[in-house]
Length: 328
Image 1 (tube, rainbow, N blue to C red):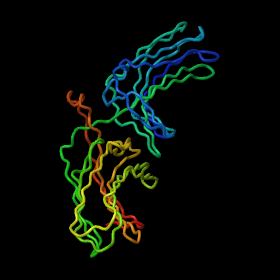
Image 2 (image 1 turned 135 degrees about the vertical axis):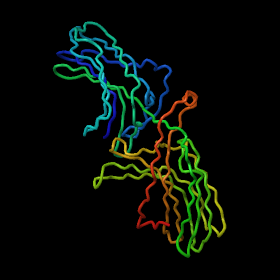
Image 3 (image 1 turned 180 degrees about the horizontal axis):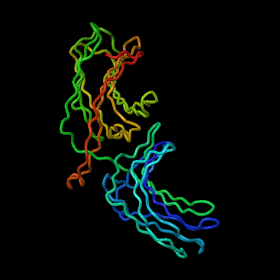
Image 4 (image 1 turned 90 degrees about the vertical axis):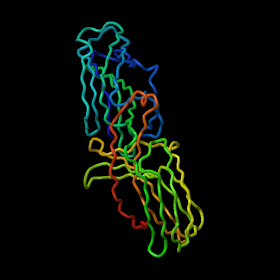
């Protein structure tokens, strides 16, 4: 599990049982938007949404159950962690001087214009999180409160967004040309294209377009790739004829997608491919993959404020052919 989190930590001296209840309240909670994110067990949770460069501020409220207790240290920290720790941000701020805690208290905290370089993500082998953590350290056992946050990485419209046009086929048997209107799509976009049949000498029973997600973790020989078919679009069911043209229109808004991620903290990548699949009458499958780039478009309010973030376009890489599914 790869975690990224905001870490608010406090140390209280105590002897037995819970010293207090911990509550974290964001300053702009009433006006801040929320977003959904899947957990490792497949459940969907809703949390407050942040963007790169936004400040994170609020209060830590401590409600006492015992009058005994002493604060030895209270501070805030931002970092990332895993079972194998991978830290990429670290901020520390002292919130209170040591002293005796005998009543309910609130402590303000603020991380100014925090750099959040990656998007929150939950995958097959990877989880990247942001959260506030308050820890009360006592002599026997600690009290911990975690407050989950979601981070989205926004991008501007790409300056160059060429269409994809390729001719593929099987020699003297099949020759088709496919065209997609562009190579980079935002997460609510529509993939528009056409399939042209220039030569048809085999009996095709079925053709579909798949949107494939590949999660790549590790480096070198330890690299692991998890492949998931996110969407399927049936192009045709039956035999095409020479000269036939079939339109494609795949709406992305209905699917659970993330932006393309390249080499996140040098630990993992998430890439998307359009996979054109043909099945003949003997159930032989032929395919052709083409990488596309997905990006998250800024909401209208942020675009009006000239909100700008970097846009990185990964270079597509050729994929090896699958022996069981001959590549066209």
